[in-house]
Image (cartoon, one colour):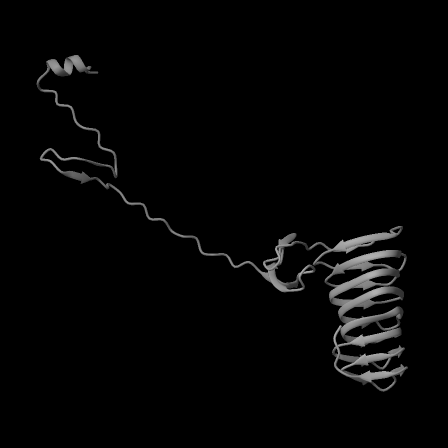
Length: 226
């Protein structure tokens, strides 16, 4: 190894400037030069298409798109934090407050006295009282007894079910395969199938009753709002 003192004593030893790749340096004749011994090409990865689904925000009631597999989301309109989990009410529950974009199921052995639920699809087979709002389908099965403010996009009374609603229920549309007792207010059409029966007053845009289906009560055919 040659140190600096040996290099100065040996006239045949010439030091060379350090040249880093891609770094400009001085030429012996003056001026600048840039050494690019190699070039790096960056390939962009293709964008991955994430499956989405349309939901209705339970805070501002506006439609938005969220990833299908998301456990939670942020509403782009009102910036509310949206829960997407499904909820099954367990026996022994008496008070429940739920806000979710998922589905809520209330089985037959559940009795809820103070209920406050906003969800997508709501399935009720037990006895509930309070406030219910389903942005999707409200399905009634078994012997469902409901009291309070009930709003749904689509009301479906399952075949063989007997559902009592007090004081009534508001829906965009209704499909009655079983028995519904109570007042029904529908913005759109009400369809009573062969095995269906509606006992109570009804206000709707139109009503269709299949042979074998029954409606006992007053029917007002008009366009009205929820």
